[in-house]
Length: 274
Image (cartoon, rainbow, N blue to C red; front, side):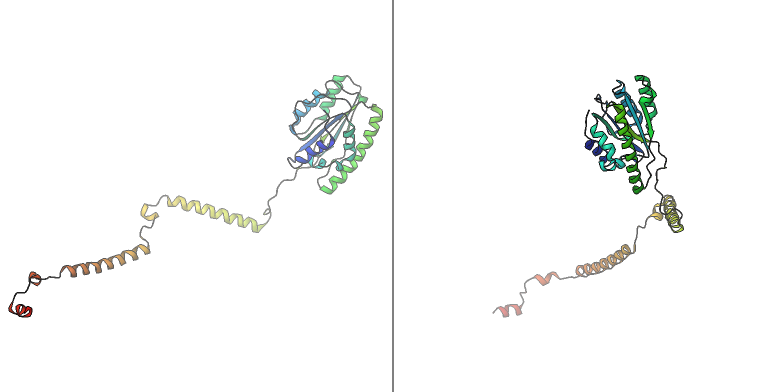
């Protein structure tokens, strides 16, 4: 289990903005550890604790260092330049286990107690430190991370000299000391926005009442069957039908005697033929 620090940082970059209430988890050791049960980059804190206890159940090293960084999230570790001392220590380690998003508060104390009881180590072999919290503003958080990284680098250098290349370090986010920012509507505290919202609600309520009242009306009250256009078309149709009737009646009243179609055989007709 020896992924590079670049791969670990890349995992943090991929989920830098996934969850604002989660924190990363990094474990690196000078001993060769077994493969963890899960490599998912999003896990619950209880699952991470169980996986870590399984990895450390064989007591791989003689010294253990637990580092708690309050208010830490994956965005803070989006590049190796943010924590160069920590990145260098991870590169020198033989085994590395990292998780980008740990949902819930991770209990490092329970892991330390488990290692102490399982391995029978003295208190001097297990150290726990808590770094200053990371503030919310981006500029302040970058500066605080740099300062904490320098402090952690000095501690790791002393630790490596004392531990004689037999140590395991767990770096994780500690409890949050700041309340997560929530969305505040722009119209809060604004009279114009509130009046506009009330006007829209009044319009919606009035439309609903009108629809409810329309359901109680009769069919002829609810719908208009004869519009002005229909009336105009009916009047024009009556006038045209009257004209047509008069015309047909006039043609039908024409009378032609049958004698008009008979051949004239009188003296005038015979003289004309001669």
